[in-house]
Image (cartoon, rainbow, N blue to C red; front, top):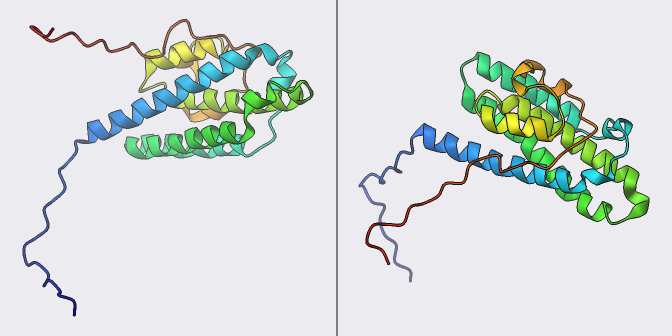
Length: 194
């Protein structure tokens, strides 16, 4: 015989409310980490590119997604719905992350016969990264300006039209970041702590 407990008539405790800015800050920090990882990968593998032609060989769904994400993010901003714009951009970030994981450019770099495929993979990811960079530039201007210079885009990211972010085709040269995209937060030791 099993005992059952009657349902409680007391209302369930409400979940603590999290301010919207904290939720969005976490999203921006996650995006920043993904962007920094992509730049590090491109910088490490950039020695494998010989021509701009290799960079513009795009053969997957990333470009179509970049167009869709740009259009939806722009529409969301116009509708004063930044959370929807961020969600749209995050779809492209997730797709790029999955693409890089699936294609394993670090493994392709070790195989001399896979140089052309490596070029296609990195060109696809670089083009997507450029699109993401333009899309988030209004909310992360300093970091995206550094990234824009690193991915060899030329000019300033602020000169790019956000509603046409997907049009950037890539660059022939990617250079390592001189420093991180975001300053490190240094914690001061507590007074009296040994």
